[in-house]
Image 1 (cartoon, rainbow, N blue to C red):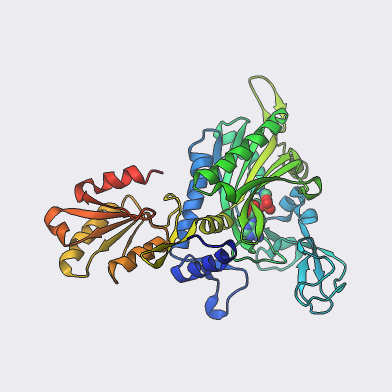
Image 2 (cartoon, rainbow, N blue to C red; image 1 turned 135 degrees about the vertical axis):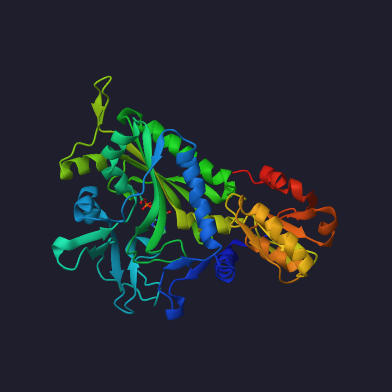
Length: 439
Ligand code: GAP
């Protein structure tokens, strides 16, 4: 049956609220604009996205190590990185209705999208996107600190520490997942652009002469990550930045873009940051940040290739890509065809009836499966409706315990996409699911 693209946005936002993926933050107080909380199902999806990134970027590689750096940092970090000066968006106000916009995102820079007034915009002012706060009880300029607008800088400032402790040599990477904060002028499109969000970034330090080839390598690797996790080929493209789009630190950038309901938009940027950041931090901090090969005597400042993805944005893209509606026996079935590695729950345990004689064996099956996978348990409503509820949140397998189970010690396993059912002995259930739920 399929769902037309324009409708997917509203359907996914609605499903997110209804089934506990994403809630408006501070909703009981009227909601805090552009800030979201991840509910019981959403937090699992988000964790799985991050886990899959970590697995492919750190666990399965010998050339990348992890880091978890502080969110608060002093102005010197952002002076060195260039964010104090350059991390700005052009802000315009409509003189007619008072609405504010990012000038570079306006479809028609001469017409206010809120009130339709022509030539009503003020001159653009450069607005710095960093959130500033104060450390300690005294609110003066000496106590100013910033919430990081990207996780990247923690990896540059720790370059020496990691080099000294990890026995790595270029090419090698430092990877990090964590929250970043940007005072976006126009947040919106649900969790696509928010002021508080999570990033998954890796800084890959390479000999300068090899930077172009590593840039190509990481563009390919990162594209394959989305495809390997089931994102449709036609939903993705790689777009090379024009020179006037490049960030202040970048020699080359390509974006992995997703076909959102409003058009192609960024999921991840892969940038060749050259030696910009290490040189800047070395200069401002007075500490050398270079690689020194004690064997060959070789000494150089590595160049950096950075694949930088948004975890929250990517989770939303996976939701949109997986959302589907099908007609089954004259009824619409909503199903999230998520790759099982991303599915919030891998298995749902469903007793056919609430009768006591089925509850005990159902709890035993749950006890058997829970140490292996995130499981849901649901004993209310007709079984067909419970299957539909699990389809809606993308659970790949439902295990049903019925009255025959008491006789034959077997259960029915239903697969989400094909809806096919297998009768499996409880003794073989873990093996059966393990061979299908590979990580
Ligand atoms: N260190 C480089 C860097 O931060 P970026 O393109 O500004 O590059 C990387 O951010 C990724 O972080 C983006 O591709 C996007 O997925 C995510 N991201 C950036 N700003 C965001 C926002 N306001 N809300 C949600 N995700 C955001």
